[in-house]
Image (cartoon, rainbow, N blue to C red):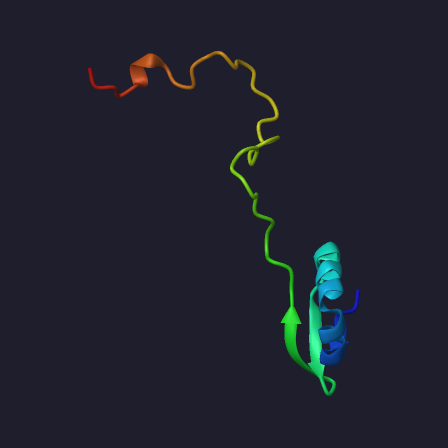
Length: 80
């Protein structure tokens, strides 16, 4: 896929649509003035979860003994 280049005047007129398109396609947009690149509009790197709730969903695929303690009680370092 070739890089998308948009003249500054077109970007100014259609910026919201171009931002939505860039987010959907995940492809940067180079903004030009007089045919020369002056800026690059790029999606934010990495999709961060918006909430910690559910952020780890699907990470545990199989657990053979779900009711067994993770460590033996003798390994605990608890103060009496």
